[in-house]
Image (tube, rainbow, N blue to C red; front, side, top):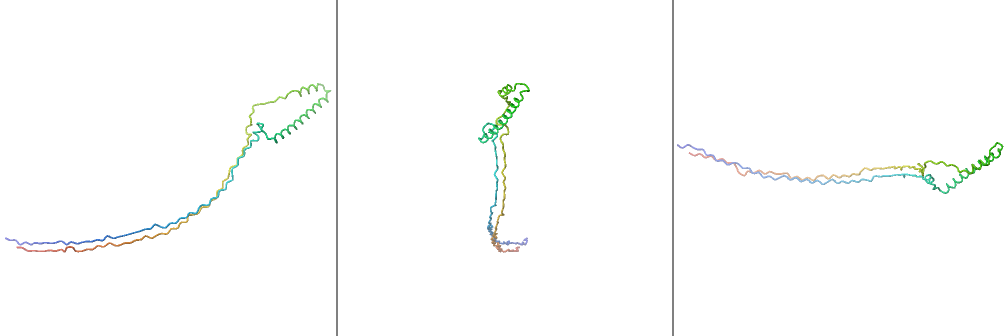
Length: 184
């Protein structure tokens, strides 16, 4: 017995796709930038410091004196010696005038005038402490300044943009088909 058969043959459809990629071009030029910074103005006023050292007394303590100071000291000492000698001679004259009061004033005067005076001396430092006079006046600094803001000039360059859109071409490369056969 022959059984009838149904035979089917099919061909699938085939679609073809052809794509063209999109192209995008962007160019961005940097911005034009101009910066100008004016210089700051600075004014400095300085009064110089002053250091004064006076060694006059230290040199005098070491007996290194200026001639004008020596002349003044000698004249002062001579005047004082003259006054003390005048006082001594006046006292001796008064003693001699009162000879009736007793004693031997001439011998006493001779003894007093012939003895060397007793000088007292303790520890001494040459020159004396604090004989150098120092004074210092510090300097004064005065600053005046003026700052200026920077001058900035910016020119923006727009981007250059080119775009080509992509394309897709669709085609039917193979048509579908179906063949039906009947066989016994």
